[in-house]
Image 1 (cartoon, rainbow, N blue to C red):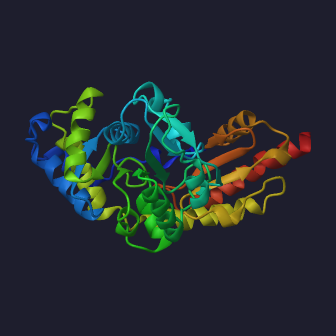
Image 2: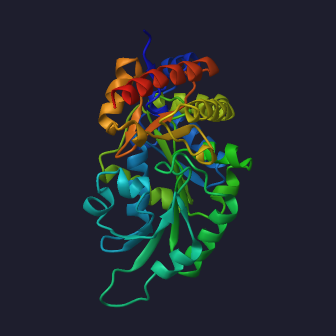
Image 3: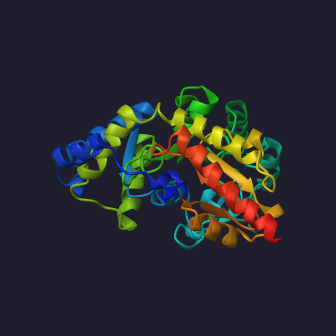
Amino acid sequence: MDVINIRSDTQTLPTDAMLQAMATAPLGDDTYDEDPTVQKLEAMAAERLGMEAAMLVISGNMANLCALMSHARPGDEVLLDPESHIYFYESGGLASVAGLMPMSVPSERGMMQPDDLRAAVRKRNIHHPTPRLFCLENTHNRSGGRVVPLKLHQELCAAARENGLAIHLDGARIFNAAIAADVPVTDYTRDVDSIMFCLSKGLSCPLGSVLCGRRDFIEQAQWVRKRLGGGMRQAGVIAAAGIVALEQMVDRLAEDHEHARLLARALAEIPGLNVDLGSVETNMVNVDHSETGLSTGDFLERLKSVGILAGGRPPRQIRFVANRHHTRETMREIARRVEIVVRSALQRG
């Protein structure tokens, strides 16, 4: 039985065109700003996202840390969704590395309201940390890849500006968001000070993320990257794949969205599973398995026994993420195997 890996779009492998580009890329020492392939990628990324400059880093986590540490000083306050990737999945780096105080702003399934942001900003007071930065995330990971609508995004940015906050957008999957919203990606970047996006997810690069912003911001971020140990040498081998990604891999993300919707509809028809079809907006499908009586860990193990590698969202959800290695037939086969697992669990129960 073939193993189907639908755990995450980070499981993608580089394309043949990427591997060829990596093998033949002109190289130099990036720490001395002498790698022409890195320079080309950074210029492409900045132009594509409507920013002045860009900086290549190893990971999205590092890109977000560089942004946090460039926008704010230790002891400052950063306002963000407690379900955001920066807060939930980055090992507490905003506190332990950046030295920032998080102020959580409530959200409903990834959607924050401008009035809640306004209410969270405290007036300057000697007893409080200084509110300095507001972080957005689009698409929103923990809500199942949901897209923050452009109008809401703009209203949140306006509320942040009213309160003198800098704005960073964790746009790991911003191209997914723009495609799903059917707007240019620059519509989402116009009102923010910085944005990072990942090359290593649906865009299929083996590693790398890019941080974009004003030129003076990127100059500061380069110093922060060095402090974090992120200085690189012949980094053109990474950048070469990123260039191919921006040239060839963005528009095809729509296929992943289509495949995710197909899978969601098929899984929703299986007794014992619940899928909020309205939340399947991009390439992620969150499935509620609580009616099966299995823990998330047990469910994942049973999926593995039928050749499916998926992700867990304890205590009651499984996550499936479509990527370029999947087809419509892959989605149908996943649904068939999942039904076997669910039927077995319900019979034993």
